[in-house]
Length: 354
Ligand SMILES: *Cc1c(COP(=O)(O)O)cnc(C)c1O
Image 1 (tube, rainbow, N blue to C red):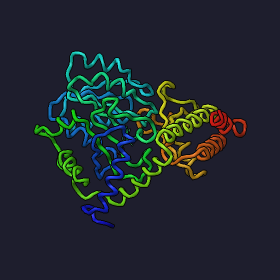
Image 2 (image 1 turned 180 degrees about the vertical axis):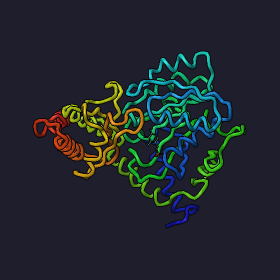
Image 3 (image 1 turned 30 degrees about the horizontal axis):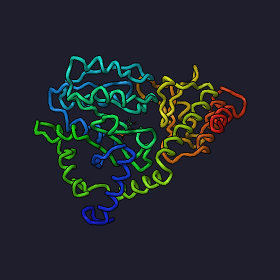
Image 4 (image 1 turned 180 degrees about the horizontal axis):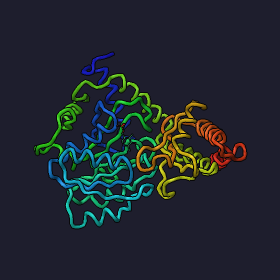
């Protein structure tokens, strides 16, 4: 291990933050916190919300619900804008809510991992640009796999984490703040923050350090992962995510597991597919693991049993997708649902070669 206050660490930290800024689409500082993504979500809200502040949370899945819980713990006055799971929030609904109501913040999830949709952050950002309300965005499962242009889109507080499309081990959360957000963060209202106080993170960042001891070894891992993204090229990385997820989606559909979310706003980092009548999603998940050594996910909340979720984030190739589909087909066959042999691979290959 090396000292986290010495020049060696400062170099690793500074390289990593510069590469992350490119992925986030920002010139702003990025605060690195020793936490999972949820710690980043809490840090984002704890630094801007004081008790009784009105906040609008856009909810289209599990992570929007989590933001509501955090905002409530902080004593904010939470208003919910709920969208059916599987659909993306329509920016005009946000426009209607902010028309004659002023909020401290509007909170959105960029890539809703529980349902597989992407929210149109650019349009929501445009609505808020000239308003005092801050736009807070969770892109924990988005950045590095789908496009994020924080500065251009007018995102005020962006939350990400190491373990999703940034393909690092878990344990790092990132929070970036616009100038507009920084003014609020630096104001002295009573807020529940200490470890996650971004004013401390800001003064540390100015010295290319973190406020408290960072997980030094994870920052080494981060730099390596970000170098891999730079080497492949961000545009190529994003295109690969789109291509591989489209292939997987086609493969799932051909096996009788049609894509769950609205096809107009499909995520490229997580595929959510409906399971056939009569089969519980969790049975598929367990069988894939016990028989084929493959880890996919189900859903525990509203969609419990009705969908399976397959991540397509980070270090992933065509072969991974084709093998997943082979195992999925074999699993379905074991569970009594047959298709002509190779149906999933065929559909995916057609997409990959188009
Ligand atoms: C994974 C995830 C999080 C954070 O989860 P942690 O387990 O705390 O890292 C937050 N938001 C979204 C959309 C996620 O997919």
